[in-house]
Length: 548
Image 1 (cartoon, rainbow, N blue to C red):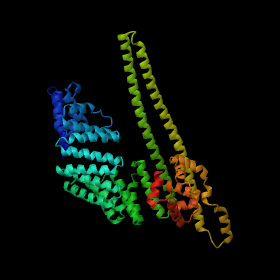
Image 2 (image 1 turned 135 degrees about the horizontal axis):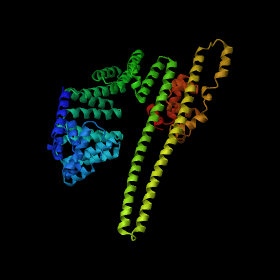
Image 3 (image 1 turned 180 degrees about the vertical axis):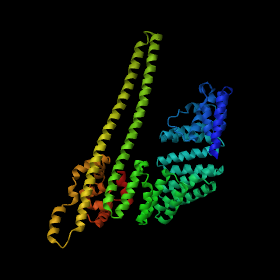
Image 4 (image 1 turned 120 degrees about the vertical axis):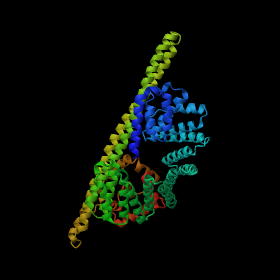
């Protein structure tokens, strides 16, 4: 019912604007937009867009206009990455000692920096906003500032400062009895505890969040909290409870974009309970929309399918799933590099345009000073602008060379990555076939057994040309082998190869096939390798391999 009413309101407002536009001055539109910014930000944005000459407003009104435009766009969930800087608003409000407006200006400048992924600047402007907000009585604004500070510290993996900011924000919202944000802050505190593996503390905060969300009947918050509790219980190996909470989450959210991960988690839980049919059932709930999935979602889906088929001992299907996983990994990597290249290209184009603009300004100034000072300043002006032009051209050339270098790196990286993936898949197929033959030979036929081992027991690992694989691993994983040899010079070739296969995400059975280990020997060798490298726990060992 609310949507038709809002639509009717907007249509009425538009009709009034077009029919009576001459009766409303820009200052009146600005005042009306400020009144509507919280209750109806869509209408406020329409009013602001109808201010035809904002530059004709007085200084205070213009500063307010810039701030309001960003504020209502943020409230209507629009992208702020291309928004104009609020520097003019900040300068005016701070100069006039309008602390509340200055706090909001700094806060929304922080939101702009967040949209541009400039985390350090976002934190800096959040701190400025906090300083001014503390001079006012607006605790809700102060709570929002602490909320954003916590989010940015979390992105920087600065969990101690993040949890401190969230707790301060929780205190602000509790004083104003803003239960909507109180529940949200408890959930975000729980997220930090979950990231730091403090499961009990995470569950305490999630349950408080769920309590407030249910009081407010906030379905989105209820859904996210159910989901977070399920993940926490799964990490604590409480699979039955985790299963119930993720099912509750699915009941509250019917949008596939949100439920994809829920079905993957539910499939994980059933797999942990060794209920393969149930795991496969929930995995198949997302397979019918395969075309709508992003590359990372397809990767998760195929990885889960690979694990299920491996446990079912359907190795042929598992092999195809693994091949698909590698393909999607490649797509994800390529997309990330392409996106980075686009960002660099965009930055390059912006700087090039700015340079061209500067060159045009320089030319005009050059002509002006020639006319004004004639002969007296000609030598100085010529020297200055020649140096300036050289600098701009040098910078443009440097950026262009960087782009070419990145493109060459991408082509080289893709070629070597493809080479490694093709080689590994080929060897995996050989290993599977050898393992299949080995499992079916008649041990009573001594002559056959003798001939078989003469042919195949050269070790599967010997068929891999590790001298060629090591450089590829170095290229693919940023000097992985070189760093490993530097950190642990005492490792044998077999141990280096074992580390490589762990880095490439092969399981114990596959590692055994490549290195000619028995299945149990893989685990024993893995323990010996961990102890030899000085890691107390397997988790520390794997974290080192993954980060290297």
